[in-house]
Image (cartoon, helix red, strand yellow):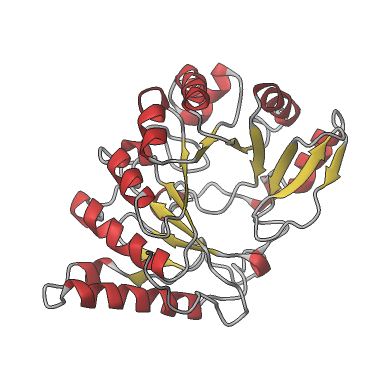
Length: 338
């Protein structure tokens, strides 16, 4: 029998939190221009990263408090040498949560099958272009062939549905939305276009040049008949049926059309900081609790659970990107976890 759960993680605005995004590392094998400079090297110290047992203590506490879905992120989560063990241990928990992972796909050829066997249910793969030269320019790595091979391996391993995450940048790949959607449909993948967010380590984000959700929708509507899917729920993506079929495309308008009112997500950074919002300026330190020698295992678990509730209690109604007083978090996306 699973452990009894305490009261749900409900904030002061009535939002029930069921989804925990867990960053396993801030390191990545690509250098996407909207995330970090090509020569970026300001990594977190390895001794600051949570080890497998520490991660499981936090995740177990979260699940006991009502977390129902875990998304493993990074950086690039497949760079963790213990990634298969982490997946297996999460999948083996009492009241095991739904388990997915976001990756750049480069290591899926070797890891898709072991991850599926360990209990991973599905994946999101980041891919912003179908063109090799553009991929190389965007990521500073000539490895688009590895992404395609990884997607094939994931499908063969039974990881489904496979979702593609694409970010469009003005004058770089903003003309490619229709081609990306047509390709995804032909491959049986579900694609989501995501507005570029002010979370890049290089500080190049500029609202005036951001490709908006409206622009993406207009571009797609030239070639496709898109009908809104009703009842979005807490999903970050607004979904559209394509050409009268049941296939859908998603558009995530984090900046231009915030969906904070239905947010059900919390985030754990790879160095053990709990965040109630991707854009939060405040963090709840869990690593300090995990490594406090004066606390017993039971006391650590109790304090971690308490901090989940405190983090949720302090959650603001929205991220405030469109407020003139908005301040970009000091951590880039790679250090927070998507």
